[in-house]
Length: 143
Image 1 (cartoon, one colour):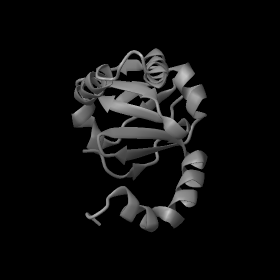
Image 2 (cartoon, rainbow, N blue to C red; image 1 turned 180 degrees about the vertical axis):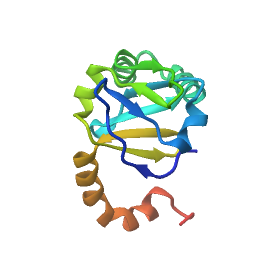
Image 3 (cartoon, one colour; image 1 turned 30 degrees about the vertical axis):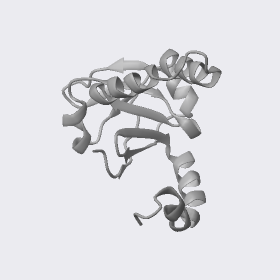
Image 4 (cartoon, rainbow, N blue to C red; image 1 turned 90 degrees about the vertical axis):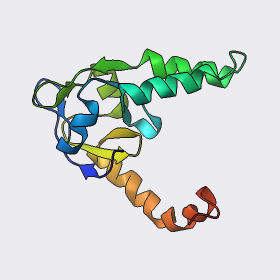
């Protein structure tokens, strides 16, 4: 499980240093995809295979499913971290997420999200006010 918030920077070769706590889970390889709200998602190979299997259950007659899979897979990049825990972030994905230098890397349970730091701060500020109220709707009977 991925938890926490970190603030690495892209280096001059557009590589991102993965947080030390995430490296073991991602050491064998990972997949970077477009995420919602203009962030990037980093999936371990195991989790990406599980996601792919779930998507295979969607009917091909569903336009929404076809559209989602096309965007997800067409923009995806498989990477293997180097010995320093760095991964290359392809240009198309950097442009999609508006990544320049300063990043926010957050643990999001089954995946890691990479945000432009200013975009993350705006998103977080907008969401924190409704966080408590949403917990009752998102997890009825649990919280």
